[in-house]
Amino acid sequence: RNITLPALGVVTAVGGIVGAFGWKRLVGIDNARAQLEGMGYELEDVDRISAQVTEAVSCGMMTMAEGTSVAAGALASGVEEGEELEKYIKLIDAAAVGMNREVSETAMIFNRVQGSGKLMTQELNMVEEAMPGFSAAMAENAGVTLDEFRKMVTDGEVTSQDFLIVMDEFAGGMAEAYANTWDGMVANTKANIGILGE
Image (tube, rainbow, N blue to C red; front, side):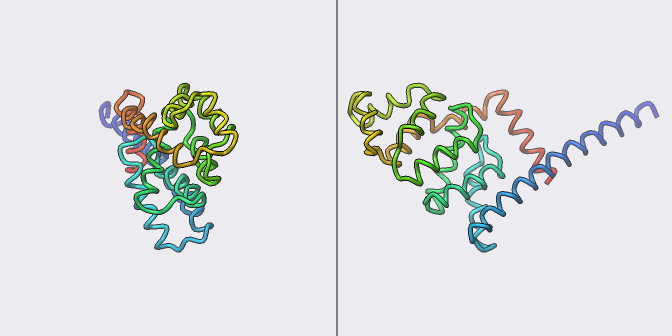
């Protein structure tokens, strides 16, 4: 009795945690899939996109629900399905870690740049505020001074492709590196418990 009652309490508590994490994961994925369906994608399209998201979020810090939501926004902004979508999701994951921002906020910045086809001052300032040195890296990539680069941005001469290339060089490996830290391992453990609960 002294052994079985505490053991039963532990099992019940663990079961509750696993169930709660699993339920949160299911609800998040369901909402994100509904976004895709709301955009006019058929069920088989949603399944195919979900498979691409699963591939993109492995080894990173983004959850499946976040990844599916990012995919919906990315597709609406003109990102192509397949390899391009997977790379885009991974890059947002890395940038979110680098900027220490929520995935949804980072995705909003990326999608605004992608949707307009160019980097504008407001988005550049949002990135620079959280990731100092990014503007300098962009200027170096363009082969101009920082002042000249700022003028190029104001004039709409910096493309979304330029932005993605420099972001990949600047922050591309941050999510994977963070996944190996203590906080990253804790977050991934929670995600795995959620998968089990699901």
